[in-house]
Image (cartoon, rainbow, N blue to C red; front, top):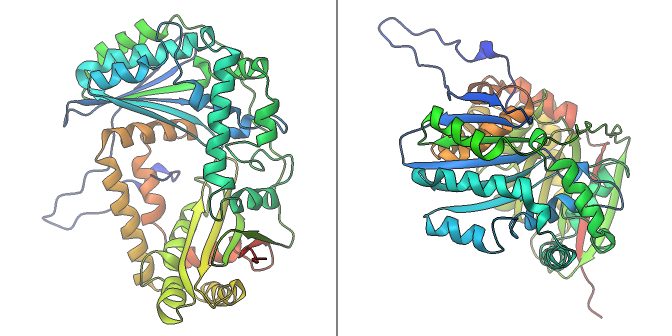
Length: 445
């Protein structure tokens, strides 16, 4: 689900007609408190289904790493499932599955997330497991265990990037888009040489700095009793010691002053074009408008680029556009794969024509409304699952606007006009400041 940040005044601004009932504002009630060790806790009760989600965000991602020591946050996504002092290797999953639950984790530039979805009667089990690895992971994190998961991550990199068709494109684009010392310059999965060079003491130091209660937030959502759940949180997390304060990231400015071009070759059969721009960080002005720009361009068979490239001219096998929002800066990207017999240059010509049309004239109201309807439908579909609500509560809290920013987030889209969409295309998608990367098929010898 996506973002937020609009003033609270936008939430209730519809005046009902005589005889109609005002639509209640979208609200997700919550209770928030903080333990003495700095752990922030958010509780949300939803008794519609007897399930509970325990969702932990550690406020550390690949952006907190240093050049030469990349991939640590993603490595810990693996290590956190390898057992802790009171939970032997493999038992974490076994206990949850025996109770009818499941769990997973993910890492991005800005955070690492772990969650358990369990029946409501297994809430305490999930809290016990999460608290044990927060407090006692280092007790079992031997050099051999680090080496084992390091090899797993290396293999994942081979599968997802090095041996994946077009897989190295995203890594190359980020190197071109962001300055060398910017924390978004390197991939979340890290570089092979950095993973190889990382010592056991490097990994231990990283954990002690970032995987502490005062650098985490815990959301529990679902079929819970609020007072009892608060008591359980205090029981399992109160005694975990606070860590040192984590300094905020101070990234260098990222500015494109011209067009950067590069061509890669890969074991693929069709050329692919990537056009990428620097764009506003998540929730900043222009972020939501660029989501609508992406939908106007490629959001369905009637969208501008799909209709032109895939349906009418049949130059492209596929085309997509998206605003990839992140905490300290974002990127807007258009990706198009040529059909056999066509070139990346042909695709770029058509894409530039359509972008120029969007800069000259605002899109039709119907186009914008269709895009907003798609966002709104997706927004409400996501809210149907308590696990999604838990993750959103955590994300909204970390963004700084308070956990219940659902209404404000949605209002960022529903308040947009065609001229707002045009203005975003003009401001953020200039033809003379972007990264142009082409992946061409290798020439067979």
